[in-house]
Length: 258
Length: 109
Image 1 (cartoon, rainbow over the protein chains, first blue to last red):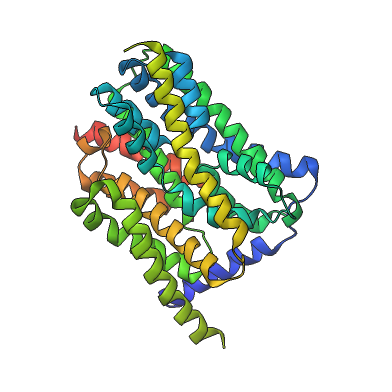
Image 2 (cartoon, rainbow over the protein chains, first blue to last red):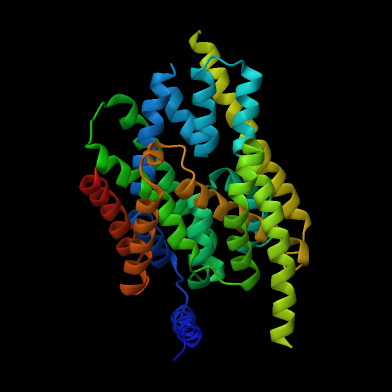
């Protein structure tokens, strides 16, 4: 078998597994959501937010303020920007602007996520609540797991998963704020490294050729965008990588499909 | 700075982040989930998230910056190796990657 055939065989095998009966029902869905959260993301967020808690303390925030930041901002890049600019004594407008820019990724993430929840005619307030709960963890895990969850139960899965990792994040923030646990540096590095690693593995199973090409192009674009315009690097990367990936993917899909 | 102004910072930052989420909801309510625009936004999200992860590994701003690039790349390779070896179990990949980074840092250290 050539490399390519092997890959196709693995993919086919994987898709067959996905095609088995999707999870449905109250208990089964909640169970899956909690297991998926507790298997890794809850712990990763707990440790990451411990780091945020101790940084927030060093910048002069109170414990309850740090916890509320994790709860309501719920986007680490923005939280870090807030803490860093506050620590260096910037003004309110500069802090809020930097935080907002660092979290601007929520716009395309929410747009691409909402329809996958497959809710029937949700009202605006409920949709806003769903959007507030969204984080990169829930986004990536749901994109991966939704094919295995019955469409009618996806919203339940999402809310259960997202609220349990949010709880872990707030708990981690408080513990990080109050504790001065000194772990061995090598262990700390391993723990920091686990977060990008987790996302990389989660996203390796994402379906769709256009989406996969977009991710590869995103990786290729970010070093250039980062060196040219560090504040806007992710937005530039998203628009360039996503647009080219979209165009190429559609061309190929049309070429193969028909 | 007074406690009030710290609270103001936190709440203003939460509101400023919420603006993007709310805009996302408003756009999502108006688009066709089977249409080309939705597919494009999805591609943009994937490119952005992949870029963010790639940046965290290749150009980290955290303490990881002190770990040499070959070590980081080796740990990613080990993680993917373990992930596929253990039938795409995330825990296997993440554990193997994290442990091997810690071990390499200690060993080369």
